[in-house]
Length: 76
Image (cartoon, rainbow, N blue to C red; front, side, top):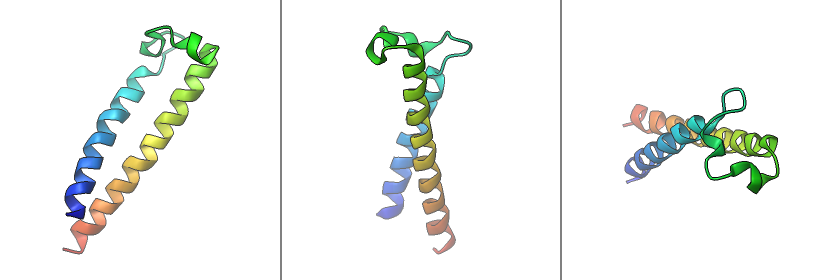
C-alpha cells in the first residue's frame, strides 16, 4: 500500500518537475512568460524566483520519494 502510494507520488512529482524545468527561461525568454506571468509577480525576477522555489521543492519531494522507494525495495 505504501509502496503504491510512493510510486504514484513519484510519477506525479516527476511530471510536475519536468513542467517546472521547462517553464524556466533561457536568457530572458521561455515558457514562464506565457499568459503574462511577469504581470502577476511584478517582474521577470519574481517569476524566476517563484519558479526556482517551486523547482527546488519538487526536487526535494522527488528525492524523498526516491529514497522511500529504495528503502522499501531493499527491505522486502
